[in-house]
View 1 (cartoon, rainbow, N blue to C red):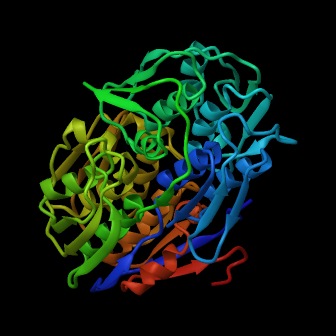
View 2 (spheres, one colour):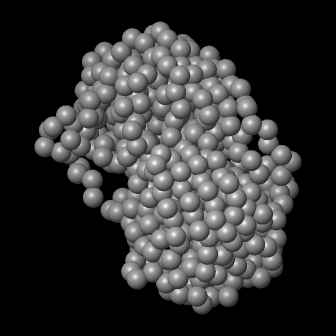
Length: 446
């Protein structure tokens, strides 16, 4: 378990410069492992993110008999066992801090012949799991939660039936759990959502050869297929790139180029928000995407310092930028005028209550900001320095690290050990582009 005393001290800087790549996409790395494990044959994955979340998924699959070999760098080989080749694990599967890993694994395990249990760390074990348990039960799975949260206990041997699930929220994790369970179901399985959510699971299943169709906000998984091994190239994680995009925008000088980053349109709502706020960003997509939307679009970003202006954020962009909202709050705090965020209640159910964590931090740093049930009102101003609590949330911690660029004094961010869960090497890459970041380990050693 990470020590709660780890922290970051981040100081103001004048210029952000460089040409960088960011680590592989976490969401796609999870899905590549799972699809490769259930495929026939040997899959080579390049660009894999070796962060703690994805390693928890890897460990869970290994404990169910999947042979996975990590090579030097970001390369992984997975020897697929086929749809029905997983074996009963010897104990509970520990998903660490990964909500994505747990919710997707619940769908994958729902139709296995053996019993299984999914647990996690203290943060994960208070996150809501009924949202995936409910549709899985509708399919015939036997899933028990603990007061709506982990541990999840799944009884093996269930015979699943395809359903047409009308999801009450736009959630890629719920949709993915249902689709992964649908691989084992009799009949079609489909999910309809009230808004757009990430489509990495559909793309990955299609890449591994399973037939899907999409129409009018519904994705349908057709029965009777199989997954076949593929070469998988994981693009750079847009959510990781977002921290450096924001860094380059709020610096006084410089220019930053980010290469090889995933530009899936279900992930880049943050870019659209920034462009509406007046950001100077050039986007070039380098990878063509076929008609089935199987390949993940990849490209380059060029970012320059920009004076942003506040706005009321369009509701349709909220779900497309949900992971980047800690950064939206930071940028709003430095923009001219007022920014209104609404329709973002999902932020209260992440690794922390991100609305509460961000607003408290901004108020500590001298910003006029008010918390609302589903968002916030933030008036742009000057960030002071001071001590803020990340509440163990990696994205909150990194967002305040970025904020230090434009602060008057250093920002000391508490409880930052979980940064490694989503962005191993963040501090070093931040230094490479000119940020002043110092890690303080447990016991006060830097």
